[in-house]
Image (cartoon, rainbow, N blue to C red):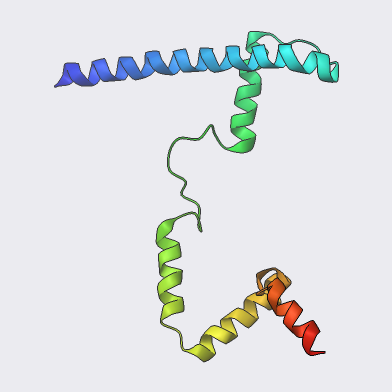
Length: 124
């Protein structure tokens, strides 16, 4: 059992190093192929490409993978909100909607459909 974990750890390490090398080469190649021609910047080295990858990791929070643990990105939070909304009385729902309209402006308001506006104009 111990050999399995050692082997698995080594494989993860090897594939991780290969992935870093490949990503570095891709960034370097794309940078050197596109940006000097388009923006007139200098070509970069492999180590500078790895630095750009690290900087993007720090600034933008990763290269995907893994589960997002953000507040509203979590399905459990949406389900809680849905259950809470379903348990409200019609008056509470209207109050909730009015509060959101007040906080977020008319972005969240129901927009009239083209047939509604045509009907309103015809009645005038």
